Image (tube, rainbow, N blue to C red; front, side, top):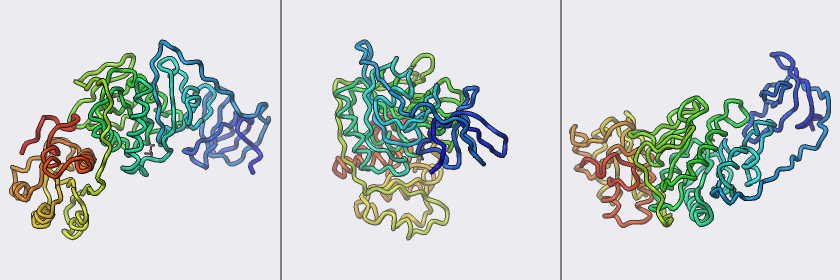
Amino acid sequence: MADYEPGDYVEVQTKKGVFRGVLLPTSQFSDRNVVLLKLDNGYNVGIVPDQIRVLRKGTQKKKIKKSVPAPNPNLPTVSILGTGGTIASYVDYRTGAVHPALSAEDFAYAVPEIRNEANIRARLIFNILSEDMKPEYWIKIAHAIKEESERSEGIVIPHGTDTMTYTAAALSFMFPKLSVPVVLVGSQRSSDRPSSDAYINLLSAVRVAKSDLGEVAVVMHATSNDDVCHIHRGTRVRKMHTSRRDAFKSINSAPIGVVGEELKFTEEYVKKSDETVLVPSLDEKVSLIYYYPGMPVSVFERMLEGMHGAIIMGTGLGHVASDFVPAVKKAVKDGVIIGMASQCLYGQVNLNVYSTGRELKNAGVIPLGDMLPEVAYVKLMWLLGNYDEEEVKRLLPENLRGELASRRVLQ
Ligand code: ASP
C-alpha cells in the first residue's frame, strides 16, 4: 500500500521539476499514472510522479462533512438522474476534491451554485460509460423520468457524451407529452482537469430544467469558452468532435436556445403539457447500416437477417450500389421496413434524382429527408415497438418530434 494518501502535504519529483502541495483524491475516470495535487498557489495540477515524499501527514481524516441546506420553498425542485460517463464525478473547485456524484448531497456539494437555482433531488439510475448503453437502459431511464416528473419541476440526466444523442432521441420518441423539461448533459473533459466543462454544463442544464420547456434537450458548451451553453433539440443534435468542449451541434437546424447570463429560447420550442405520457416499447430488431464502396452484398444481407427494420446510411442523396437493389427488393418483400438517411448528415435525401435512387424507391425504400441516421434508427425501433406495419411506414417519414425540417419528407 502507498504510504501517502489524499490530504497529505507532499513533495513530488517529476521530469519537469519538483511540485509541492496537498494530494487530492482521484476519481474512477482519472488516469492511473497521474496524481492530482493542490499547489500552494491554489491551482490543481495532474502530474506524472517519479517519486512522492510526504512532508506532512493530512491533519484530518478525509471524510468531509457535507450538509445540504433545508429545501428553499421559493425554489423549484429539479431531479438529477445519474447514468454515468465522465460527468459522473466532479471536482469541487474550492477544495479540489473529486467526488463521484452519487447523491443529492454530492451534487449540491460539487456545484454549490446549483443550490441557488433549485432544490435538488438526485438518484443514480446506473453508472456506466455510454458506449455500454443499451436500448433496455433507455427504457429504464424513461421510467425514472416518469416517476420523477411527479415529484419535481424539471429533470437533468448526466450522461456519457459518446451516445448521449441516441438516448436523447429515444427519450424524445418515448415521451409524446412532457410536463417537465428533460435535459441531458455531459462533459467532454474529465472533471479532474482544469479545462473541464462539467461545472458550467451541469449548472446550465439545471437552469434549463427550471424553464417551461416540454421536450427532451441536450445542453452542452456552445463554444470553447466557459460562458455559454446551447440548448439542442433531442432529435437534432450530434456529437461532432471527439474532444472539443463545443462538440455538440444541432444539424440541419439551429439550437433551440442558449444559456449564458440569461436563458433564451431562440427557436420555436415545445412547451410543457399538463401531463407526462410515456410510450416506452422498443423493437430492437433494427439495423443501422453504413454503406461503403466495396461493401459485399452478402454483408448487407446478413445485416438484414432476422430484422424487422433497417436504416441505411447511403451516399449523397441516399444511394447504395445498384447491385444491392435485388437484395433490398427481397428484404422489403419479406416485410423488412427500410428507411434511407444520408452519410452527408447535412441536407435532404432525394431518391428522385439518380436512377439508383429511383430503383431503391421503387423497391420500397422510404426516403427520410434530413433526419439524422441515428435518430431514424431509434425512431424505427420505437415505431415498430408500438404500431402495426402500415402505421410504421406512414409515420417513419412524418415529423413527430422535430426530427425533420418539414412536416413530411419529399417522396
Ligand atoms: N466514453 C465516455 C462516455 O460516453 C465519454 C464521456 O463520458 O464523455 O461515457
